[in-house]
Length: 128
Image (cartoon, rainbow, N blue to C red; front, side, top):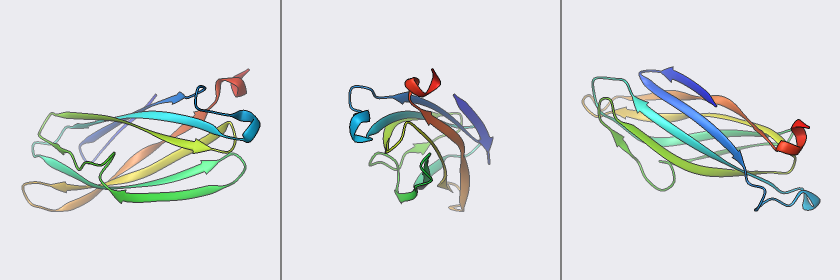
């Protein structure tokens, strides 16, 4: 699990290998990740967009961006937390992700970036 606070937003990431959905013989490794965002600011924030950089250990990388997360643009009041689960597929049993969220101060409507700390995606078989 990794955690980081930037611009008053705490981001915590926990990853899970999805063996039931993976097929190593076809180079399909599926991972899930749970992200919690906690607003430590004195104002409400809205998560507008996300941008991901996904790196596979075969040196392949891709970028994913879009509005909100899992189909929503959550608003977090001061002290509130929002948690969601999403997933990622890799062609190898190891990879890494990082990225950023574009947030908006709901009082001033000023937009700001919050970096998502890098986290590893590792199949348990690779750890043996």
